Amino acid sequence: MKARGLIDLYSPTPKLLHMAKSGCSFILVELLLLLQCLSHLGHGYDFFYFVQQWSSSYCDTKRSCCYPTTGKPTANFTIHGLWPNYNNGSYPSNCNKNSPYDGTKVSVLFSRLQVNWATLACPTNNGTKFWSHEWEKHGTCSESVLDQHSYFEATLHIKDKVNLLQILEAAGIRPDDNFYNVEDIKEAIKAGTGYAATVECNSDPSKNAQLFQIYLCVDASGKDLIECPVIPKRKCNSSIQFPIF
Ligand SMILES: *[C@@H]1O[C@H](CO)[C@@H](O)[C@H](O)[C@H]1NC(C)=O
Ligand SMILES: *[C@@H]1O[C@H](CO)[C@@H](O)[C@H](O)[C@H]1NC(C)=O
Ligand SMILES: *[C@@H]1O[C@H](CO)[C@@H](O)[C@H](O)[C@H]1NC(C)=O
Ligand SMILES: *[C@@H]1O[C@H](CO)[C@@H](O)[C@H](O)[C@H]1NC(C)=O
Image 1 (tube, rainbow, N blue to C red):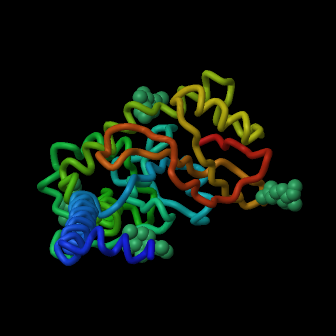
Image 2 (cartoon, rainbow, N blue to C red):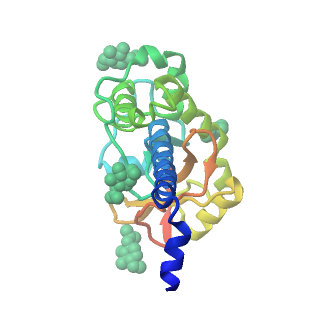
Image 3 (cartoon, rainbow, N blue to C red):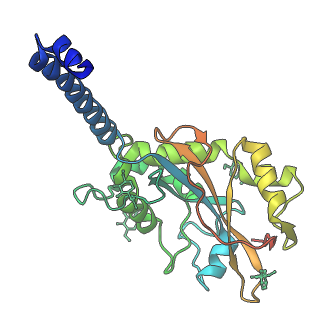
């Protein structure tokens, strides 16, 4: 009887009510999908890893390295890349075959790139190969936000803001072949930048673990450091060498 009463209550317009209800939620779902779609079109990724490397450790990893045509890079951290990443840990790559690296778009940045985004790959070259690899594999995946020129400029700008060498030296951590506690390195970077970093190590020819790369995270606009939504899984020992370059 009670159930009947309920049905009776709605009986004047049960169909209309049902349509209105499902119609509304249908529109709501559509709207959410549309928003999701738009945000995906806007980015196609969630954040960036900003990765800097220590040149002498790179040379050990590759077992050999070649100074660029412009000569031995300064003893400083250099950029490896700015890599779009998803919050689920995976990352997009090679997103647009129709957007090859074009040196004319970044030529005003060459002198800064040569210093801060130096190539150490062999044979000796002028960096074009490294920058085109980084653009084509990673940069094309954030192209909707940063075009080619903006991508390189934004990356250089972040490096200028994050003077890792100075931050570490302020904490007494220097590239002097001594061994340092990796937790002290992370603490210094946190104190200097405000954000947690991931340290990646490799081994030198005598199997000493050494500081190789430092990962920080940058928001999808490519402007500001953020806490990493996903901590990259990278190997390191508790005590690591910071080699002279
Ligand atoms: C991670 O998220 C992206 C974007 O939403 C998606 O395309 C990709 O398939 C996801 N990967 C995994 C392993 O879940
Ligand atoms: C670098 O070298 C390549 C050929 O190896 C050349 O096409 C390119 O113009 C050079 N770029 C610069 C900036 O010197
Ligand atoms: C190292 O690079 C930073 C930018 O990240 C720059 O501010 C600093 O002057 C450089 N230091 C040396 C010793 O070249
Ligand atoms: C890292 O530490 C482990 C355990 O302490 C040690 O066996 C290994 O040799 C170390 N690796 C390097 C490269 O120092």
